[in-house]
Length: 232
Picture 1: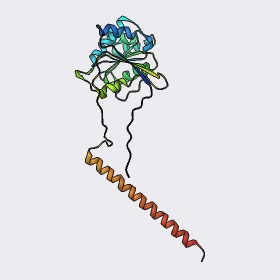
Picture 2 (picture 1 turned 45 degrees about the vertical axis):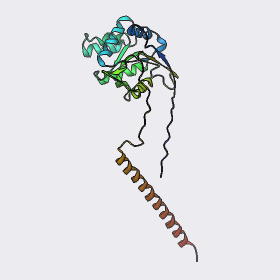
Picture 3 (picture 1 turned 30 degrees about the horizontal axis):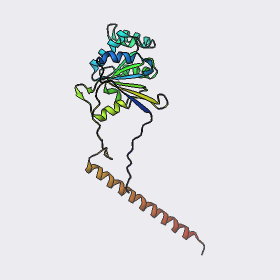
Picture 4 (picture 1 turned 180 degrees about the vertical axis):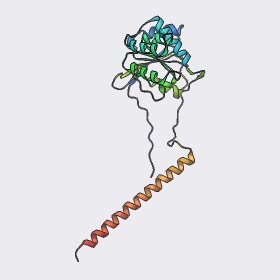
């Protein structure tokens, strides 16, 4: 049995893209955009955990975007010590998400981000790996993961975080760098190699043949039983 494969492009929300790659002072413009509450909740994509931390701390020294995170900041002081610099960032409404953060703390920040208690979340690519967020705006501040430029597929995944059906029907993407060149991505219909996939297809065909045979035999047996019960 041949299985048809359909390819299509579909988006559940509209996305407005703003080109900011020509600004003279990226960090100054970033702070300006973060202070605009029409962007909230806003994700800020950054290349590495160290840059995430530094930008979150620097932003918190310039402004406060929420007073709903005081309880979490107090908990962090008690459990991680009062000198951790990220406590000040959280206290002023800036969350962080990257692989070096304790997982439970990162998860809590994401929940508070979705509830607008942390309206701004600085993150690395860890946030595009199956983490559910409700961002209205995505600010793509860097064009790399660690020191390697990301490709168009990764860029599209990051950009796709903007907007959410039922909450933010029009998402916003702010680009601080030139996006990667668009490429067509072909997805194989199987998750295995060609040989393994071929065996699976042949196996599925064998199952279908066996199933048709059993259904036919069952139908014949049913007819024979019905004939045997008819009166002479």
